[in-house]
Image 1: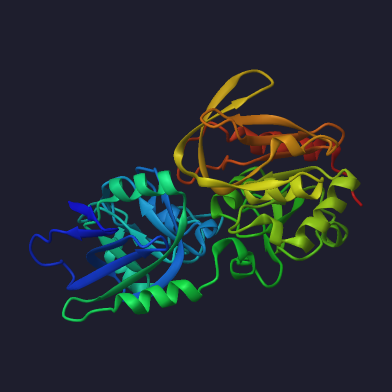
Image 2: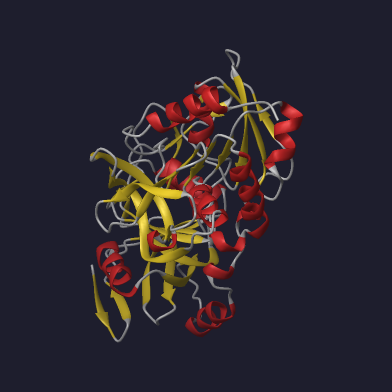
Length: 398
């Protein structure tokens, strides 16, 4: 599709760009890619990452953990089944979305296809256009992902503009140079609610739990509601202990979310108190990292992260393997666990990074992967059942 010459990819255009848009993608190391555009004309800066998922783009694009990032989808065909209606719900939660909006700064794909599905109400181009998200297509995503795997994820700027106009490369360089780095950005406040939200299962509930919402996926909510939990979602910087009293709650869940976990100092401090009190607790993705940091462990940034629906993990207690859905760029440092009270529960088979922790003295478990899938396999749905058993066994009114 293109050739790499002097850090520039020169794309051979075949015919007109379908929506009359052109695009540029400039990486911080100087690599410049020109391609066609779709979605909404705009200029965006973000950390450039990739996902290996073959399906599930509506769930992926609405995952709050992608806040502040430009996403490459490695599967070459995107948009086959269109964009589903938000009116398809369960317990008043949309079934095919993970939040109320698209969170990626921009989308990079090889090809956009025409949709053909009974639930589709619009194309992916129309969806991005309606939410003011720029997209790049006719990109050699294989070359681009190989570049990131070698160099590591990095900041980038995207410009999508009408084909009869142009965007100056020097302007893009200046914009990128003065933008804050992803690692230094506190992004959770952009995706966490400003006040508590209470969700009640349509068939009634057995127990109440507090969900510390750092950017929770709807899939996590759906699984908790399906297990007859009344869920009190609270802002990331609120103390869950206060809500345990108010709502007679018996457990805590720390959700997924975007950004560098070490920046969430208040959340980490409150989590330390939750662990100390012995409250049944489950941490997922960013929540896993928060609980580890609260116990005294450390985190580090991965070279290019784990994002996709085909990531293998192993339970070190019984050697049982699972295929998991993942979306994270940071990991817990196994060497820092000594003296924290946590032991390794799950490991990533590919790179041996920590994928789950169990506390040796408290009813606290964590997983780095997403047990709810959405999109992805259902191998680890039992994590929610285990948490429910913990609440029923150890949950006491405070």
